[in-house]
Image (cartoon, rainbow over all chains, first blue to last red; front, side, top):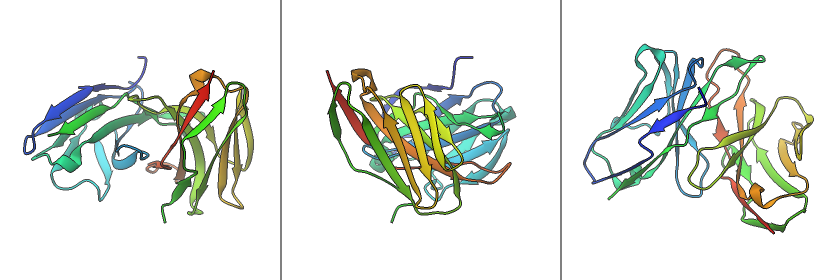
Length: 115
Length: 114
C-alpha cells in the first residue's frame, strides 16, 4: 500500500445534486479524517473516525453532509443538495500509532466544483 | 483571531537562499507541531513532526519550536526550485488516545527562482 487514495479526483456538479466521495486509507491505519480546503486557506477539520466509529464532527459539517466508514476500512463523504459554497478540495487523511505518535498522511484530495 | 497564524506570502527567493517560514499559535493545549508541503492541486505531504521545544533537523530542513512564545518555524537551507510549493504549519493538542485533529495555518506559497 503506497498511501491514501481518493476518488474521484475531480467532480463537477450542478447545484442541488448529491455527490459522494470515497477515501481508501493506508491499510493498517485505524484513524481516518476528512478535511475541507478552500483556495488560499489551510485544511479545516470536518470529521474523524476511529475504526468504524465516527467520534467527532465539526460545526462545519451541516446536516447536508454525512460520512461513513463501514467495517473500519474505506470511508465515504456524501453531500446532499450541493451549494456553490461547497466548492472546495475535500481531503482525507489516515493515521496509525507508530513510534508512540499518530502522524496524519493525506490523500490527493477530491476537487469539487458546484456550478 | 485564528488559533494558528501564519506569515502571509507569497515568498520568492533565489536558488540557494535560506528560507525562514513562521507561525504563531494561541492555544497552550497545542503540543504537537507539524509542517506540511503542498504542491499545486495535490494533497499535503508531511515534512516535519515535532513535540518539544527546540530544533529538529532532517536534511536541508530544520523545524524549530518555542513553546514559551508559541512560535514555530521551518528553515530550508540551500533552497531548490523543487522546493517551490505551499507550506502549511499544523498543530494538535496532547490527548493520548483521543482525536488528533489538526489545526492548520493558512499556508505560505514559496517560489524558488533558478
